[in-house]
Each structure stands twice: as structure tokens, then as C-alpha cells.
Length: 364
Image (cartoon, rainbow, N blue to C red; front, side, top):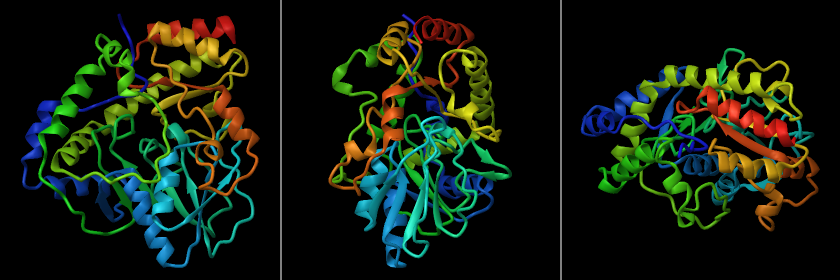
């Protein structure tokens, strides 16, 4: 049975194995990243979460008190900011575009984080007086005018499964210069890559998708997390993924257009299309909002094996209660109750898009 993964794009295992033992791997990889991100300094770390933690520690030492971000998104950001010494304040999001709605904040104490969810580009217009964290974990393919996402402030990258630079772990800070601690490769990392790259194929993904103990796609908030090690295998995987960066970006742009053409006239909201001035977004997942029958449509899409996901099932105020400044976030709650994401990776076909489109048209 053909079954798509919600996200993917792993590089060749053979290429990764070859790069893992290259003594110049780290310096080559850092050059790659600097070239992509406007020649800014690069600091490698074990994950995007650790990148947020390190940035939060740094900014806390400079007198900043609080990280402000949209109330719909990844809970790892909250956990990492708290670990780094910043309090976390949530703001509501626009339920049509998914953008955070920043208001009046204290530029001397507050840091604004732009999640750029799924590769969408959050506007920073009018907010230049604030310290900004530009999260490119899901948005490394995207641009805002002439600026690649990740370069409009301190940038964050993750090289984990399903991210724009798809790998088995690791991360980086853009605009920050710190010598990383790198460990020799452990076989478990490359074994994980082997499993991921084989099982993400449509002919085999039905196997892990049917195993509940893998907890694929589940969202958890863990303020007591442990940072993993940054190993040469993780770096080699990201290094090989970046070699395919231009091709991967164009592939996703092409599939993104297929989804737009198929869904643009249906009874759904396309956040990408709602951002009228946005032309530089290349999404790692294609988000849609379904006002009616979301659960039924998702169940049908899941049965059809087209890689649909509900993404983050609740808002951050609900998931991280007691750790964030509480408030009422109707936009974020609406997004959580209506969102479905659709895949944009290399295995998506026109037939997959047509099949999903027919299901959505039938019930939306």
C-alpha cells in the first residue's frame, strides 16, 4: 500500500558514510552554512532546541527577561527558553495566516521569536527596534525580500527529521560564534538514518505508521529534557542534505504549487495564499485550515495514505500551562482545531495531490 510520510527528505546513506570520516567535514559544513546564510557566523550545536537554549542564556546575561512568541507552535521553544533563563509570554496568532500578533512590548527586556511555521514567512515589519530570533528550522528554504529566513536576527536551525535541512539531529545558531563540542560518531545515529531513509519511502512508510509505540507525530512538552550529543554522523547527514539544497527547494516549490492549484477554490483556508505579499516562502509542509468536518477529513486522508498530519494538536497555553504567562488565545485555539498539513517532499505525486483534493472537496 502506498503511504506518504508527513515530512521527509533524507540524504543518501552512502554519501553520509563517506563524509563522516572526512577530517575536513566540520570546516566544510560551516562554510556551506555561511554561504547559505549571508556569510554570518555559525555556531553548531546538538539541536535546534539547544540553539534556543544557548541564545536565551546569552540574552539573559545581557539583561533580557522574556521571550515572546505565538501561542500556536512548537513546545520545545518554550522548554528551551525557560532552560536558558527567560520567561515566556505568548501572543495570539492570526487564524488565517498563522502569524504571531505582536503588540507593545519592552524593547529593552523582551525578545521576539518568529517561528515561520512550516516555512511560511512571518513579517518583521515595524519591529526592528526589538531583539529578534528568526527561527529557520522549518523555513531554511524561504526568503523575505532578499533576506533568507534565519538572517533577520539571531537565527536558529535544526537538522532533525522533518526539518528543512532534513537529518538525524544537530542544529546551529546563525549570527553567533562559539566553538562547538563534537563527538565521534556512534553507530546508532547512522542506523537511525538507515531506518529513516528506507522507511520514508511510500512503499514502506505504512510499517512505522502502524506502530503506535513509535509515537510518530505526537507533541510533548518536556521542560526537563536532556540535550543530545553533536556527533560527526549528524553533521555529515546535514552536510549531504545541504548539497541537495537547491534541488530540494525547487522540488518543494513545485509540489507547493500543485497543492495551491488543487485547493485554491475549495472551502478551505490556505495561510500561504492569505499572506498576500509573500512570494519567498517554500514550505516543508503545506498547511490548510478546514472550518468544517476537520476530523472526518483527516481520518479519510489518513486512510488514503497521503501524508496528512494534524501537526500541533493544541495551543501552547494549553500544552505548557503553568510555565507560560496565561491568557486567552482564540486565534491559536481556532488554528489547533482546524489545521491539517500536507506533505511537500520528493515522494509526493500529482495523483497523491488529486486524491487528497477529492477527499477535502467531498467533506469541506
